[in-house]
Length: 100
Image 1 (spheres, rainbow, N blue to C red):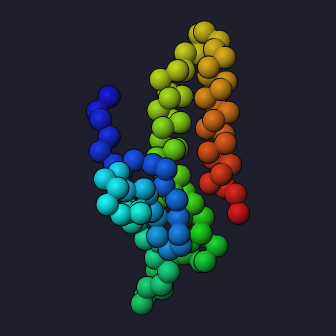
Image 2: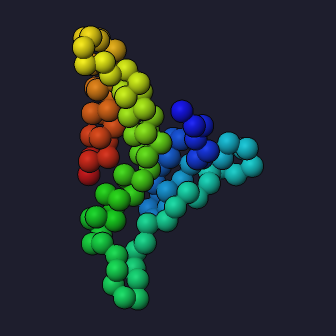
Image 3: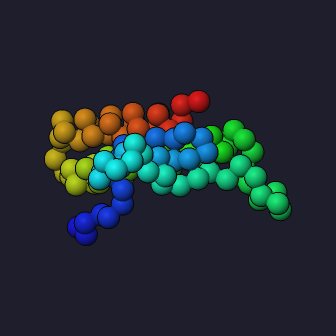
């Protein structure tokens, strides 16, 4: 697998910004992305979707890590307690993204 080069998590959102701890320690946090609030042409989602988008973006590193672990563990021919643990973790992350 190719090494990832994204800013390490955990990410969080301080609306409208997606933020992460600064690995270098120079700043309290880094701005990863900004969820658009307005656009002169009206090309932004409704406010409730903006909040949901921010939660989803902030969860990206955790979602990817859970998915990567799950994919690495899946072996349909052999039952695995570890697989159940990873599926539960993936469900927790999805639930956190869906939480209002």
